[in-house]
Image 1 (spheres, rainbow, N blue to C red):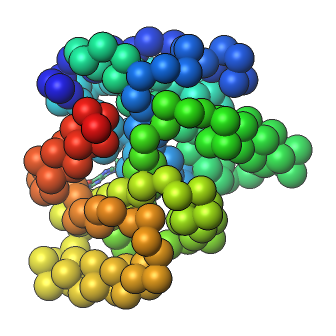
Image 2 (image 1 turned 45 degrees about the vertical axis):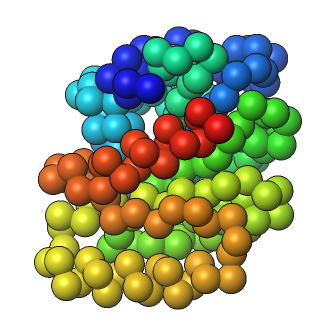
Image 3 (image 1 turned 90 degrees about the vertical axis):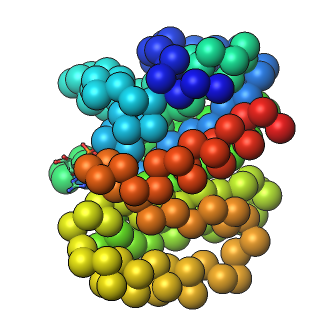
Length: 197
Ligand code: GDP
């Protein structure tokens, strides 16, 4: 797989608008502002790719990107926790996300993007629990590592690893930075393993 082959495919607001449930998908989740779009842009070597997902009106949609291997896709899930969304919108978010996560057979793994300085928020923990319960392989990208000194970043990673130790679903815990590209090759290799398995 060449990740720079990624192309925007379609946005979906409901399960029945998603591409046919065949092939292999890896989905990216994260709290708003965690750095999910930047991570996707870095992984696909495309500075604009995930901007599509950020255009007003699309932020609440599930965005699909095709890859050069037949039937392989990356999926940008809506960011969680917009500053002041109403209770109704949160319910809506949970509902359509929940549908996708629960029903999607071709989902091979979840990438959870978190700011290394603010790891394992309530939302993150909810996603970890969900993956554990549903036996879905999980990759944690602890991003914006360039914002910390290396020693501090290492310490943060140890703290995250310790908290995640009980969770068997966590297959990869990667120190990442969209700015310095730290962790990029490791992340791409893990994605390739999941998508080509
Ligand atoms: P999203 O809401 O999760 O998609 O977050 P974005 O990718 O839009 O990033 C939120 C903010 O964090 C933006 O101002 C980015 O430029 C910044 N950012 C994202 N990733 C990194 C990173 O690895 N390093 C640094 N220094 N800033 C980052």
